[in-house]
Image 1: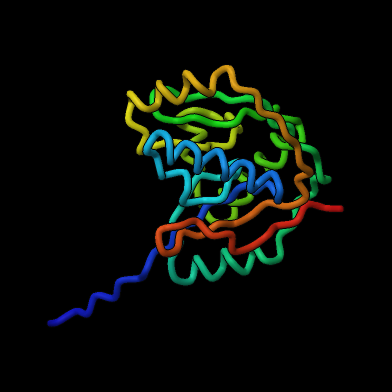
Image 2 (image 1 turned 45 degrees about the vertical axis):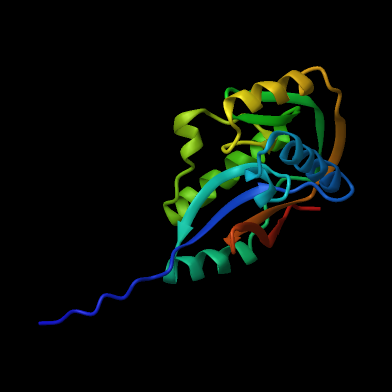
Length: 189
């Protein structure tokens, strides 16, 4: 007997806070500077962001159900300010902009992770591995060790500051080699 195997296409998503312009442009400028000077391009595939839920796969009916639920979702967290300050690293590959985690950010993330887990059985792997260390990555993964340490030598004393009001989070989808925001999830006003 011949069985037809139908392969469902899996799509990758993640959920993040995406800073607005002009801060977004400034952060993307840092990514471009690192790409040009230190030959690292991986971080250019996404807008500058604070990851709240690591990437996960969705397909078929589960994807349709997830996208429908996200379009109706709102978190009971009031908009809050996020403060960025200077730079940090996860040796030997990740360079990031630090941020000061607030109770609102931690609460929002916890609500989001619980909602995804309880409604869709999707788990946030970073909880098991490293815990939550909010930051905005500006270079990672394809950073060669030698280049990483050369970049860190320049950035560890460099000053950076900024802030923005977080009033929504974004669902991003991996399409054509880039992460694209596809849905905004508002916070209560």
